[in-house]
Structure formats: structure tokens, C-alpha cells
Length: 263
Ligand SMILES: NC(=O)c1ccc[n+]([C@@H]2O[C@H](COP(=O)([O-])OP(=O)(O)OC[C@H]3O[C@@H](n4cnc5c(N)ncnc54)[C@H](OP(=O)(O)O)[C@@H]3O)[C@@H](O)[C@H]2O)c1
Image (cartoon, rainbow, N blue to C red):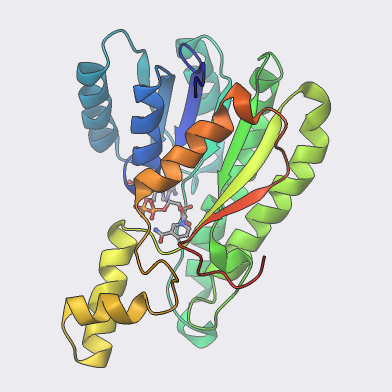
């Protein structure tokens, strides 16, 4: 399938690691020029250097952005748009959640994580929207999470953060549709980033078993029996960014090996 993404321009938040990094890498392979947003400039610059080396001719800019400092969002977006010469695709990937049950999560953790997702996503999208309106193929791709559809007591924070992201995706799709901009969400299940390594370690400690047994235990409810790779999320992001997905909007697609029980 020809996706025709060459020379498009994308903003990727959370590009310094995990899923965001995989999306940036997959986009670069399609010839998409990139702005990598992150707090850790050293990591982002190393990723940009690596991508430039592998994909000659790509324009890749690195922009410092910390969602805990809301005033940095607009200047970061404007600087990236200026350096790239506009933007067609926004991927809101930055995020995370404090693990635990209701009485295990302090107030400051709720506030800190909500500043990144969904609040950071709201601010990022609002500031990028004027630029997306100038594109003939505007795309917003929000990285949510399956806990947004199926909350769990042991991951209390992941529920509202990702549910909010899904709700925003639908409402933004309604608002941006008349400008030809699609808005979709990808909901990853447990994905092999540093969060997965942490979870395996905690589970092995709690159950007094090996890391291998802990992984097996964690995957017992995944019909395909596999942990999700960041590259699998990135593949879907590439498709949603393309013209071939031009009639898909307001959707949330799970990439979870079949774990989510609802349809
Ligand atoms: N991994 C999973 O199992 C899973 C499952 C469901 C949903 N998700 C979602 O997928 C997305 C990516 O997750 P991941 O596993 O790839 O996480 P990760 O490896 O921990 O990466 C998180 C990214 O978010 C950035 N970030 C965090 N706080 C920020 C802030 N205040 N300002 C700007 N950037 C900030 C981080 O930047 P720094 O490098 O500066 O910290 C990093 O690039 C998140 O939205 C997460 O909720 C992940």
C-alpha cells in the first residue's frame, strides 16, 4: 500500500522514549519531516542525529517542552512550526501514570500527571490547530490506553487520564472535521517500554517468582499471549497519518493483543 507520506511534517510529543520514539522512527522511515518534543534535550538530540543518519535529507528539529510548565507550550509549537515550515500531523504521545490504588496515589501525583495528559494534550492541540488548518491533510493522533475503556482498581490513575483522552478525541474530531482534519486515538495495552519492565519487576517481587513467570502471569488475559511492541503502535499511527485513512475520524483503536473485553 502506498501511503504517500513523504515530505509531510509531524510533531511528536513524548518523542524521547518508548512509544513516541517508535512513532518518530516509523514516520522518518516514511520520509516525514519531524519536530521531536521533549524535556530531555540530550536524548531527543541523539534520536534526531540517529534518524538523520539513517534517512538522508530529512528535516528533524528538537524542541524543548515540559507540560508541567504550561507557558512553554505555545513558544515550543510556534518555534517548531517555523523551523519545519508548518505541520500536517500532530501525535500527542507524552504521558504516563502513577501506579497504584486510590489510597496509594498522593494529590501531587494526580496533579503532575494530569498536567501532561490530558491537559498537555489539550494545550498542545489548541496551539497546533491554527497550523493544522493550513494543511490539506491535517491529522491528530492521540495515544490513549486501554484502561480508559476498562478501568482497574490497581491502575486507578490510568482510567481517568486515558478516558479523558478518548473523550477529547471524539469531541475534537467533531470540531476539526469541517477543516478536513481527522482526529483518532490509539489505545495501547501493556507495551514493552520502561513501564512494562517496571511492572514485570514489581509483579515478580510481589509473587516471589522469576521475571519470566511474572511476564507469563501478566499476559494470562491477553488472547494473543504477547506483550505489545512500540513498533505495533507506530505502524497504526503511520496508517492513520496517511491519506488512505482520510475517512477515519473520531475512532479509538486498541492495540492490545485482544485483551480488552468490550468491542
Ligand atoms: N507503555 C504502556 O504499557 C502504555 C499503555 C497504555 C498507554 N500508554 C501511553 O502511551 C504513551 C507513551 O507511553 P510510554 O510507555 O512510551 O512511556 P515512557 O517510555 O515513559 O515515555 C513517556 C514520554 O512522555 C514524556 N513526558 C513525560 N512527562 C512529560 C512532561 N511533563 N512534559 C513533556 N513530556 C513529558 C517523556 O519525556 P521525558 O523523556 O522527558 O521523561 C517520554 O518521552 C503515554 O501517553 C502512556 O500513557 C502506554
